Structure formats: C-alpha cells, structure tokens
Amino acid sequence: MQQTITNWLASLAAIVLLAASQLALADPREVVNESRSVSGNEKIYIEVMSGEITITAVSGNTFSVSGKLDEKATGYEFDSKDGFSRFEMTMPRQVNYNWKDKANAAELRIEVPVGSSVEFKGVNGNVSVTGIHGSSDIGTVNGKISASDLRSSVKLSTVNGEIKVKGASGKVELNSVNGEINDEGSSGRLRYEVVNGKVQAKSQAEEVSISTVNGDAKLELTGTKQLKLNTVNGEIEAELQGVTSPRVTGSSVSGDIELKFASNASARVEIKASAGGSIDNKLSNDKATKAKYGPSRSLQFTLGNGDGSVELTTVSGDIKLEKL
Image: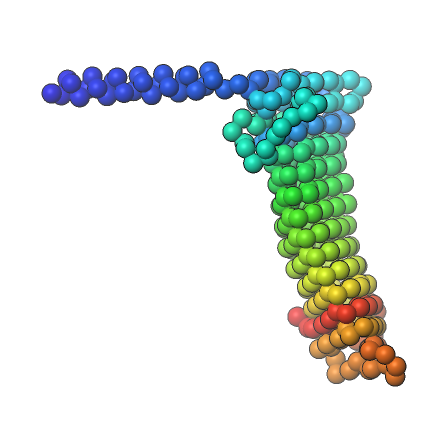
C-alpha cells in the first residue's frame, strides 16, 4: 500500500513538472538580455508601449535591459553611441491592445548609471524607478508610476493612473489626469498638477506650486517659504509648518482654499472674494468687509511685523485661514 502511494505521488510530481515545463515553453514572449558600458552621465531614452517596467540606478557605468517583451512586439532596438543610449520595444503599427490584460505583457528590468539622465515613455503599463540622480522624465498613459530617491530634475506624468513618489529632490514636477498623486519627503522646488484627481503630500520643498481642476489636495508642508495655489471646482488644504514669514499667492474659481499657519506667523494678509465667495479668518480678530455694491468681500490685516505676505482671491468659493 505504501509503495502504491509513493508511486502515485511520484507520478503526480512528474505530471506537475511536465505541465510547468510546457507552460514555460508556451510563453510566446521574446527574451531580452542586453548590456552596454556607457558614460556615468549617459543620456538614455527608453520606450516600452506596455508591460511592467523596473528602472534601477546602479553604481557602475552600465546600461542593461533584461526580461521579456510583450507577446505582440515585433522586436526591439538597443543602441549606444557618443553618450546617448536608446532601448525601444517595437510594436506593429496597428495593434488591438487591452491594457487591462497583462498576461503576456512585457516584463523588463532596466539598470542605468546613478548619474544618468533617463527619459521613459509608455502607453499601457506600470513603471517603477529608483535612485536616478541625473534627471528623470517618466511618462505613461494608462498605468502607475512608483518612484523613490530621484534627484536634480524630476518630471513624472500619467493620464489614467497614480503617481507615488518618495524622497524626490531638486526641480520636481508631478502631473496626473484622472489619477492620484502621493508625495512623501520631497524637497527643492515642487509643482503639482492634477485634473479629476487628488494630491496627498508631505513635503519639505522651499517652493511649492499646485494647480487642481475638479480635484482635491491636502498638503503638509514643512519649511515652505513660497506657496502658489490655484483651483477650479476643487479644494486645497495646506498646512505651513516651520516657517514664520511665508509668501503665499492663490486663487480659486468655484473652489475652496484652507490654509493653516504657525502661531508665530508674520505676514501682511490681503483677501478678496466675489460672486458670493466667503472669507473665514481665524488668524486674528479682523473681519471681512462687504462691498457697498455687489456681492464681494475683502479683508486686509497684518500679523506680527508683516515680514511675509498672503494674497488670495476667490470667485464663488470659500477661503479659510487658521492657526496650526
């Protein structure tokens, strides 16, 4: 009986191994394994229409691509010359592609030098990028971008997807349409742009600019000296910590702005609201005054010595000022 069970288990194991090997052989995707020695500040262009892409910066001066192409790909191009390198997964001119079907999409691992400048373009897929200290320009249409430790010049953009970034520094631009931006630990000069989405951020950037259309934003800012806000049909909440003389400008159209300042903030404040907009001031005892003609209101006052400035306007929206 024992021998029968042992033989049965052995036969079952053989069947499983045979099935696995047949599935591996049935994978229609072309395998890539390319590597080049390049300069430490190489200009690298990568274009992959679909798939799961991982881009990692390494200490050596190597540009390498490994993994599998999309099953619909016709091949790839890999060139490197005079400080410029390029990898492109080539696709048919017309391809019927469902971006939600990832079964046989590309799976590529890409390594680049830490000091290189990388530009990536995709259409349907997710991109993960880490450690590039030269410059990064990463864009996709339908997919998620995950990034960490990017420096110098950073530009991340997606149309239908999420951007999640940690520890970016330098000149940073984050742009999403129909998606969400989640930023943690950024520094330098920062710009957010979102349409039909949300922004959630904890940043130490000295300069921050944010624009939303039909989207909401919640910013926790530390040491931010300059803040520029703009919203249309959205809501922006911002906390300014660790700065006593901020310079803030902003406007809203049918949208709300809520700002929270340090208790020792020093600034001249000027706010104007029209077309039914409202002003709620909890920084001081000053109250908004109503215009003699028309549904507009205005408020002017000075906190401390007036070292900084806060200038805000709204049309059919609400502005609220509070202390942290």
